[in-house]
Length: 261
Image (cartoon, rainbow, N blue to C red):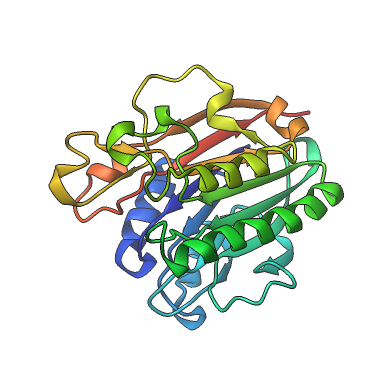
C-alpha cells in the first residue's frame, strides 16, 4: 500500500500536475492540502476519470484538504470534532488496507503561524493541542492510522537547510517542535525517520531567492503512523521531481510504502 501527501498550493492551478503525477505514481491514496477552492469547484469528475475517488473539505481562496483514493472511502470526518474553526484543515476517512485491515487516513493542513509573536502563532499552538486531543481518541478506535500532511513544523535542525538562520523563528520554534513531539508522544512514528536518509532532504522550498535551485529548504511535510502500521513501513521518500516542473507547488510529494500485516 502506497500513501502520499502533497501540498499543491492551489488544486485549480495544479490539477494537471496532480493528474500527471498520479499517472506516473499510482499510489493507493494521495492526501492534498491547500486546495484553495470551494467544495463546488472540486474537480471530482476529472479525478474519477483518472481512477480516483475523492472526499474533500474546500474553502475559497485559502486552506482546503482532500483524500484521493483508488477505493471508495468510508466514515468521512471533516475538521476536528468540537473545535470551532472556520478554516478547512482536516479530513479523515477509512480505507481497506493491505490484507483487508482497515486504515484510518487523515489529511492535515496545519496552521503556518506567520510569526512567533502573532495571533496566528497562538492559534497554531491551540490548534495542535486540539488535534492531539482528537487523535488520542482516533488512535484508540483505529489500530492502523496514518496522518499525512503539511505540518508546518520542521522537527529537528537536520530538517532545516540553515538551522542558525532559522533559529527561534516560525516552523522551528521550541513550542512548535514540542507540539510535534506531543503527537509522537501518542505513539505515532515519523515514517521518514524510520530509515537512514541522505542529508539535506527537504519537502518545501521558498519560491524566492532560487530556494529550490540552492536546496534551501525545510522538511515540513510528514507521514506519521501508529506503531503496528509503522512496523510495516517499507520506505518513505520525498519526490522532488514535481518541484522542478513549470509553475510548481512550493512543496514536493512525500510517499510511504506499507507491507501486509
